[in-house]
Figure 1 (tube, rainbow, N blue to C red):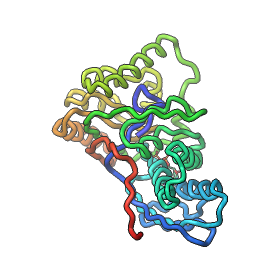
Figure 2 (cartoon, rainbow, N blue to C red):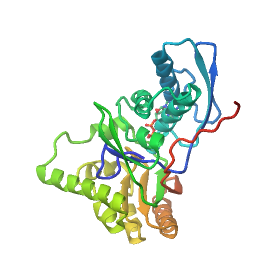
Figure 3 (cartoon, rainbow, N blue to C red):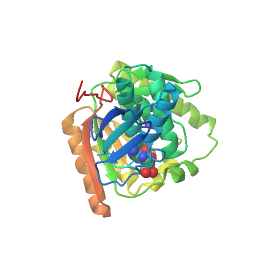
Amino acid sequence: MANLVCGFDILGLALSAPNDIMELSLTEEPAVTIRNLDSFNLPTDPEKNVAGVVLLSIIEKTGRRFGFDISIEKHIKPGSGIGSSAASAAGAAVAANHLLENIFSTDEIVQFAMNGETLASGVKHADNIAPCVLGGISLIRSIHPLDIVSIPAPDLFVTVVHPQIEVRTSDARQILKQQVLLKDAIKQWGNIAGLVTGFMKQEYDLIGRSLEDVIIEPVRSILIPGFDELKKGCKEAGALGGGISGSGPSVFMLSKDEATAIAVESVMKGVYNRIGIDYNTYVTTINKEGVRVEWLRS
Ligand code: ADP
């Protein structure tokens, strides 16, 4: 999940669910062959699938003659705002590195995976990729040069609602203002510092107070039906706070315990049942491990 409220473009966290499953193997044939095992109809042309783009860039970097076979079983719906493309990109990069006996550093894996994000959204960003690779919460202090900081994540529950509407990332980017008022910037950086400190010191009240975005959310939330009502209801149900996940349409809320996260889910369901929009919800936790690798054969 990228764009963590006040941490637009710089803070992301990994979710325990939903998650994709991919099987990767090395081949002598110098090509990337993709098999989709789900019904999302994503491209099998490696240049048009983020996993393919990542693997091609890895092969090129090694300068060797070999290829990969990959099968992808997605459970994260593309375009949901919860990092569907990043899951494929990060998974492919981590798995390929394992097959290549870990010749690349973590920063290099993130860089390879970012090539996939460029295909998906036209912009090179790491706030989905870094937490997928590293687990937990990541601060992307800088992209050029890459500077990623892992932030110790407290035990928090995450409730996500994905209303089944389309929000194009390009539209969500286009409506943003290119300038901000100094007074808003001051509020925002106070909140980012508060949020990071709250995560590190496990101060839940501070996390709650800092989950405020005065720059992006007021503009973007108009793309998400029922957003204000949803947020108000979730906070009344006990959520610490939350906001738009990625560039939407998914919305997430953080809670201290599972019972609250489930109460928050009921509020989310109530809002979209009343508005009449189909949705999926997830009650999950912060995934502190990131991409998980299992060897199928030695
Ligand atoms: P999300 O909003 O969930 O983060 P993204 O914006 O990350 O979704 O990516 C979705 C876009 O990337 C879609 O246009 C999709 O067709 C394209 N895409 C290409 N390959 C993949 C892949 N392996 N997994 C997910 N999306 C992919």
